[in-house]
Length: 182
Image 1 (cartoon, rainbow, N blue to C red):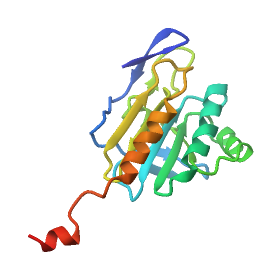
Image 2 (cartoon, rainbow, N blue to C red):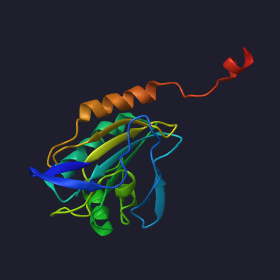
Image 3 (cartoon, rainbow, N blue to C red):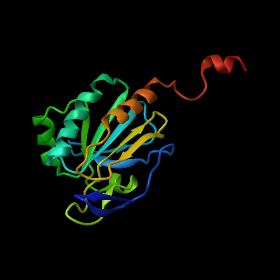
Image 4 (tube, helix red, strand yellow):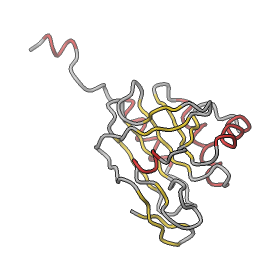
């Protein structure tokens, strides 16, 4: 896989994950320095947002926009993943009042590799490509967008539609009524 960085083709490392497949478990670092795992099955649906760097205008605007857009979703865990340094991300979260999403750092590039988003070369080497994943409660990827040009924004409308769709679905598996009618 590859993206472009200011028009220059740039290869990505890691596994290519796709819609309909299980979201890989990935280890990230929370702002308090503790490790956590995201992806896979979860009590809530997950919105995983890969952000190359909060130090850039496009990334910063995207983080703020998603923070506003997800306020209405009660059963959604929104996780913004970046490769910026931990202290900068802590300061950014506080300064910009990011309160409806969890900002985390991919210190070991575990998320980047498991989701195929690690930029392999160039000025942005070892950064994340810009992408979003909507993961249902069963841990299945319901929506994916890998932005082709790093300076472009994601399709917010399509992402929110995907979240609406999975949150309105009934949970898979049997219900008590179905079991009783067998």
